[in-house]
Length: 512
Image 1 (tube, rainbow, N blue to C red):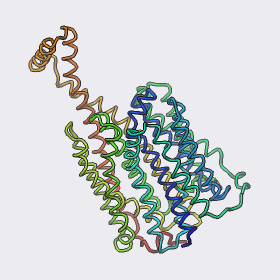
Image 2 (image 1 turned 90 degrees about the vertical axis):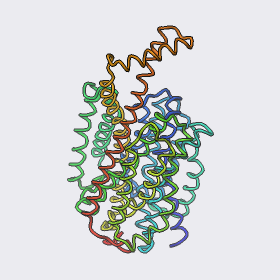
Image 3 (image 1 turned 120 degrees about the vertical axis):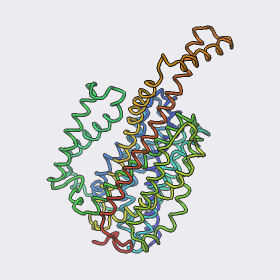
Image 4 (image 1 turned 180 degrees about the horizontal axis):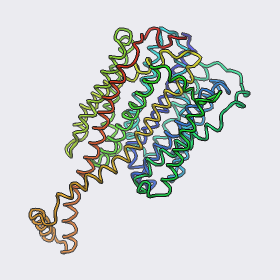
């Protein structure tokens, strides 16, 4: 490979890393951002979801638009927009401006992920593609886990706005690498005449409806709210019409015929579920440490850093392992380790904090690369080079769709399950329970002895009974999330067994 090609590969991987990093970089800092912008739990979820929705919408358009404007021109334009949007996020003063700037950031960053994958598939020689996929896999697995760590450190040291400004220097490096490494191609504006704007409209309508229902459903009493019912109508109309149009359109945004390829179809489904587990797991842990253990952004970052570091030990050996070992076995081993780490986290209690989470985070970190990279290789193995752009777009869109749904469902799940657990716990606390009455009386007497008046002491004693119930019900809801993720990942292991065996040396692009 030439120096220019290596610059393109590294520049693309850096772009993908930054785009994925920015999905999670806000998680450890949500409490600080929410406090500064006066947001609640359900509202703060939109900081991540708006970015992901925009990414999901733009990814299907990426292959087409890169052909219209040329790969180099299109990537450089989006790199520039990404930097500007990052600066605008750091200057946001309320939720609407933050959502707008995060969406703009997602629209530009979303293109960098599939295009980075496409560069590896089309510019690297066959023998070096396992190395290229390892580099790409490093961005996919490390970025979500290092995001909260970096965000937490920067927030603690320099304030939450710095987590967006940090993109400036690596963004400029990315632009220089891509400018040197990619060849300038001609415009092909004639393709714009064939663009399916109607399908794009229904895609936006469907995804927006689904995400709105998941994000705001708990806050607005679900379908008792007119807004949520409108969201349901958007989802029901937009999604099926988009899919039908893709199946019968001469120029589809998404080439759904690729799903006739068994490896691509199964690999994409597994990646969507794993993407959900990958992002919702980190998001859930960030919320748990902030809300239950009262960790600062920097403290959360230090804990989640343990998901990133062990991956660096596995990555150098992956290209060799992929050549010597059946990639299906590697993927199953990785998924089992990931599932077991979630099972450990499902046993949460009030005494589980950063130190106690290290073992599960190490297991997760060692397992993630073992399934993310082999799955990418097996899914794209029988996709031709001419369809690599479309395949990359669908594959990465589904992973991000899983991530978006995972984050939205996590917030919804926490609120719903906490309500259920709190109801169950309060049922066991009867006002006629002599032990409870005695405990409240003793607490009230102690507080009155400390100088509080009778009314204040009575209210405070009741709070001391209720607060543990609120805390324990919240912990139980987090445990439930990880238990569900455990079974979802075990289900993915079954799907991996249905994949055709592929060889890393030549099967990544076997039909080229």
